[in-house]
Length: 316
Ligand SMILES: Nc1ccn([C@@H]2O[C@H](COP(=O)(O)O)[C@@H](O)[C@H]2O)c(=O)n1
Ligand SMILES: [Mg+2]
Image (tube, rainbow, N blue to C red; front, side, top):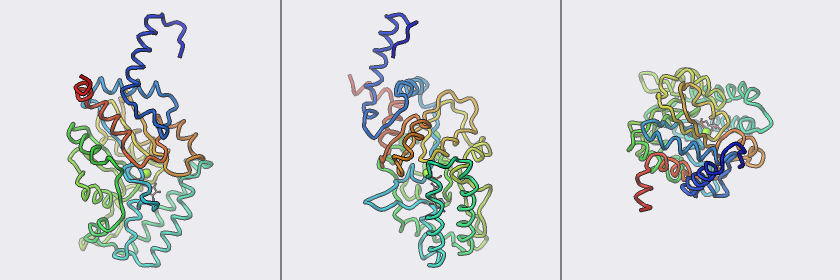
């Protein structure tokens, strides 16, 4: 890029610096990685690196962001879908929930509809499913087994992601429109529910006998995360730099409860309806990962920000 008012020596220094940080993360050159403005991404990473671990927090969506979208040709269940087990729900309920999924999921990912148009329909979907789950009198003591029997799968590289953040005491806020109790059980069973992890989600309310009687608090769906972020603002840490991960445009609002941010780098997983949604994702997220079932890119970025000394010692 030519900036006319910058003198030639400064331009040369900038060019060398740009080339230098470009080589720092060669993984960003993969064809599955799309960026509207690569130089801005690299500059943001560089600025975050200068502040280091003490200035960073990570805010991440859960379903289809920290979990895989598919595995061996099969869709990986979301926290809602994990409850689709005969230990918890009967056949009739299963059919009704599947019908609702087939009706509303295409609306959730429809590139032609705005978030405002989707919002009331998402409330309808979530409310109907939660009502059905309450009718089934789901028992709390069955959740552990149901999660164990489910095909739930965190993305490749999840252990490195969770362990690195824990090791360097970087807060990880998981902000999910899924079901919090199920989400917690998934990360517990994968041994990554570390003390730096905080979860905002839809939690089940069990009666004294451990039977589901309601859902707690205000409903969180994919397109009202801004309201959730404002409501739970105090639970977001006062760190100036944010790495935000999501798979829906609605996830971009997860950091809206924060004040005094300096740099926010957003990474979007584009799992489904790729061609239809590519343009809007590239416009909205800083980095878009197309049909990438791994956490490789978030991990290399985190390592770059958090462990500059490792990179240097490897080079010497
Ligand atoms: N009955 C439902 C409702 C929603 N979903 C999916 O869950 C995802 C929400 O969780 P996040 O962690 O991604 O916020 C959302 O994308 C829905 O597709 C579902 O499977 N069943
Ligand atoms: Mg998601």
